Image (cartoon, rainbow, N blue to C red; front, top):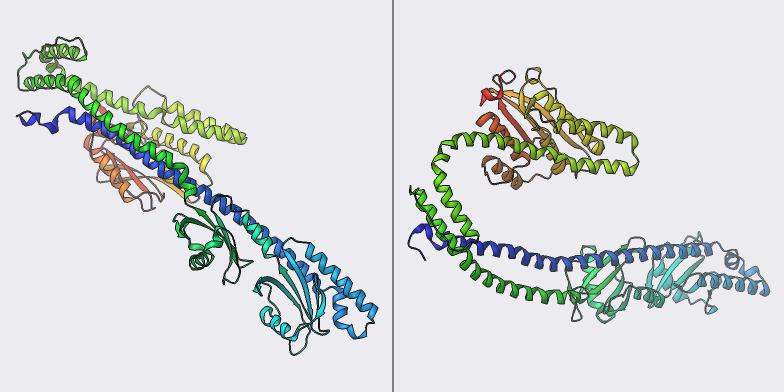
Length: 589
């Protein structure tokens, strides 16, 4: 649009305004996308946690129930009637045999009815060749069946066994014979239908399913949609086991499912819940459509904004810029007019007044610069004075709520001493001994909160440096930074060290910690922030201290950062040693 390079399109404010507006919209669009993904992730995590908690609770309850059934089963091993029938069968009369058998059947029936998960209780009595069942009564013992029972159960098997299309618990009474065959075996058959019905309670979402599977795959019970792809689901979970990632969906039977896992070491089984992906995504479809409408509306708004900005801002501003260029080239008689009484009319009139006063302002420039430097120092110090107030009120509130009266008293005394120091306005400079004392007071306040997790070690300040005059509040903010960004999250073993060094005509105050969250990227960013001064940037924290030391001591004062040998951040405050204690600051500049 312009021939001069200074007025090229890429240098115009118009395009920068458009670009800025796009930057404003971009985070909103990114936020929308993030919220959509976050909503899916949150819903998925909430469902996973809830489902896992429910499943684990049921498994714990099932473990307790199976243990109770086992106790009843082992109790049967010591049943008096059962042992008499086994050992004294040939000595009993018919009436006594009948009485003992009926009594045993009643006992078996009571055990069966003691749990909804028990389908039948049977006793295999080899010496008398009988099977006594809570359901079928007394029947002859088939030797082939008995041998199969011994093969499947063994003499010490206490696990749930899958056999004859059923689930069984067994317990054997040792006989002491050389062959090792037991006197009798107590067998409890579990009710698979009741177990399946219990699994169905987890199918709270439409299309979901639940699978109960043993480690060796012998036990397989399914409810809900899993029944339609039982073999595929069983093979998948047997392969993945506990390593299955809930965050990834997998297709079973033509539909995508998320899998939740909970296992029981006691039962050697696990429960897998299959939740359809659409359960999570379907409620967010409407949000997704609105996001696209928002994106389209944003494009229309950008176009309207661009047209109005060019007409009402860019053109009048371009005229003002050209006039400034002429003034820069030495035309101090430059005058511009504007007919409209809008903001640009005011700017043009003030521009004309500025040109008229420019010569007198040149004479005052040097004095203004010195005053601005002093004002900057005071402004930088005033920024940091109230910084600790928010954390202090939080600590005091916590102590009050917990009823820690003794520490509240101690804390308020220290807090009063702290704020008496930071609100003192007599001088911008204090002795180094006062500054270190204030830093110790602040550290003691923080240790009231973190004493169980964090320790602090202060070296003694050299006597020769105690009277040194330094800017106020240069050590305490460094310690505060260590607490907030390095040590606050440590559960134990936190350490902060303050020590003093003198070398090559330089005095140093070293503050270091053992925080483990300092990455090379963060350290590099902080180093660059200290190395480059940006007058328009926000000056807080270490940059604030660095600038105040630089203003006070020149290039020989400031802050350096590095990784501490303790593992965290090492911040070093440095300034010249020569004549530090007895030369006024004004003379050292």
